[in-house]
Structures are given as C-alpha cells and as structure tokens.
Length: 273
Image 1 (cartoon, rainbow, N blue to C red):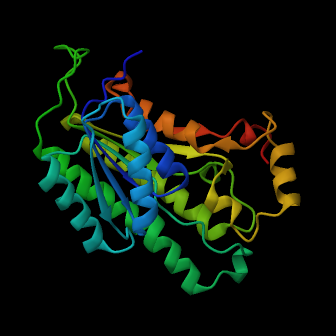
Image 2 (cartoon, rainbow, N blue to C red; image 1 turned 135 degrees about the vertical axis):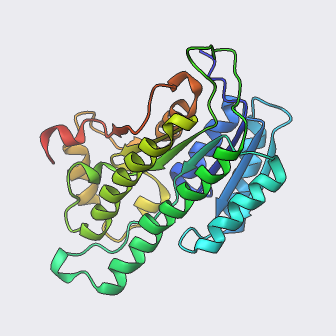
C-alpha cells in the first residue's frame, strides 16, 4: 500500500531511539525532505547517513538543525530554518522528551518537576504551536487519493505521549503528568485546527527498548523481567515499530484520524500493570 508521504518531514529527538527510527521510516516511505532535530550533532549526522542509505527517494534532501525544545527561541529557529530551506513542512513527529528522575511523588523535587515540564509540556506546546503556524500558511498537499469529498491536507502532527498517560508509571509522577498533558494538548489543538486541513494526533508507546530506557538508572534486570512478564506479547517493543506507525499516522491514508491517542503497548495496560 502506497502511503503518499512525498512531502517534507520533521522529526525531533532524531539522534536516537524512537526519533531515529521515525526518521528512518520517513526516509523509507519516500519523503522528498527530512529535517532532523536534536541537541547533539554527531548522532543526528549519523541518522542522516543511515536515512540516505535507505531512502526510497534517491534525491532525499536532509537538513540537520541543532535544537533544544526546552527553549522557545530554539523551537522557533527550528521551524524558521526548516521553512527557509524547504518552503514548507508537511509531517511533524515530536518525539524528543525526557523521562526525569524516578521518585515517589512526595519526594519529587521542585527542580525536577519544573525541568521535565519545560521539555515535555512547554517544549511540545511550542513545537505544536509553531508547526500549526507554518502549516496554516502553506497550500494543501495534493495526492492521488484526494477527491472533492476528501480534500488535501495542509499537514500532520504526531505528538509522542506514552502508555503512562493510561496507567500511571510507578515512582514516575513527574513523567506521568506530562504525558497526560500531552494528550490534552493534542486534543485541544486538533479540535481547533482540523477544519483547516491540519491533523494532530498522539501516539502512546508502552515499554520500548531504546538507548534511553537501557541507560535509565531504574533499568535493572529485575525490572526488565517484571515488564516482560506483565506484557501479553512477552517482550519489549522496538523503536522501529513506533516509527513505522508514526509515518502511517502521518499519511493521508489516515486522513480521518484527528485528535486520537493511539496506544501501542503490546497489551501491557490490559491487566492494569
């Protein structure tokens, strides 16, 4: 099935994990342009090389933009740089974020509480706001599946939330509340801008094995066993599974998906664990 994702994609957190996997999936899907955003140059350029190697579109143009989403001006610079280079941005995958410190709710410091909000809430707010602002000004991207009853879209935005927005993460109150906020932000923005041809949705992964998860202080063999034992599929998810789904959500094939929170957790939350 052809996805008709021939436009320009922007991915934050593109240097590793789900962000990198999403960038690779967009490259495989045939986008003409790819904006890779993150804080560290080397991993972003490594992702760019891998994307070039597997790109469906042999003329794929890749732009690397150093970005700290916890800083409003950095987010504005990201979007301006992308538009100056490509003229438009069609698909945005807001994957960058932080897990924060593992702690009982009563032990969360104000410093940790504010820090995670700055990235996971304020950063997502700034990204989505600036992305909408760009998309509102651009022409609709026509694809072969469009019709008078199914008009072309101006753009798609996918926000990375988490299964923690369905069932709270133990000792992860600071992280959990930011993911509930991400879901609310997604629905509010989607409602306001769907009529203008902009689709905004959230994806809620469960436990996905990434570099970030593996290096987290709480990532012990015992914890990994508990997670696997509590998952009906008996395994961690893979970053590529999430990246592929983000691209499918971005495709005009999914043109009726608006304001959705798509749970992808291997059934982990079915038992409430």
